[in-house]
Length: 322
Image (cartoon, rainbow, N blue to C red; front, side, top):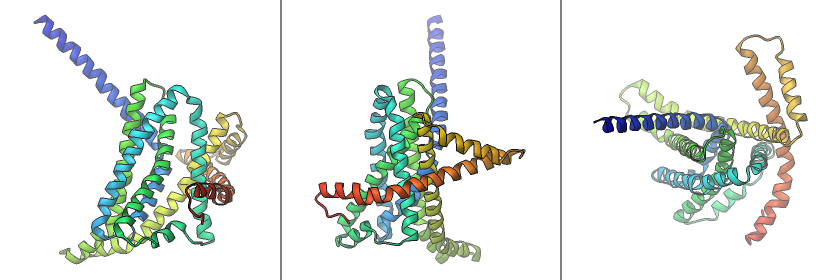
């Protein structure tokens, strides 16, 4: 009997340790996931374009295909790669973060440049040449998964850098939880966004009350505005996150001038302001300056990437660069 009680005590102790570990993983995942907010917003804003033009019945299946591809990117390719890098080459984390930061700056700046100086989109032009809906769907899904891979790589790297040092399995479990949670949040939101107009039409046509019908009409009319708002917020978030990553990376690599200048400027601007607004205003100023730096870097990268790097890769693929 005493042996059984001792065994039960051991089981209870193990259960307590396991429960504490789960809490630790969840806590670290929440902290790490919060660092990727800018990329998540942009991912949710960008993805709906991949289902544009398809029949309503194909929208959710396409999103599910992209979701599965995103999980494969994160869990099968990027998670093992991140753990290997963290174990054998942790010095690579900051340079890779900065490389991803430059990509975010380029994407954000390119969207602003396109808005100010409208020009043809090679992706849209290529889609117009595809006549077979099945082929077009495969092409869109493939393009979305490739885009997701870049964003997922940045998400996983940012999350890895934000995780406190822990055991290998704890870090891996945290990254896996971040990967699944972010993927579910992004593509669940995307699914809701792309079906919102259908929900609105259904309510407008079948609701039994005038209030319900008004909500349906509001959803239909409001979706274009919501998409425009998401796009704007996503662009701003990309520039802010990208600029912040680059400035912090320069500080880590031994060039702290810009990092120190921005933080001293933000602290001086709110000097004398008491209460919670002090921290919020300081964050706003810092984020704004980070975003302006990201925009400047992105504008410099636009001609470099579109005129030099992109044609090189296009030439390797045997395609004619646009």
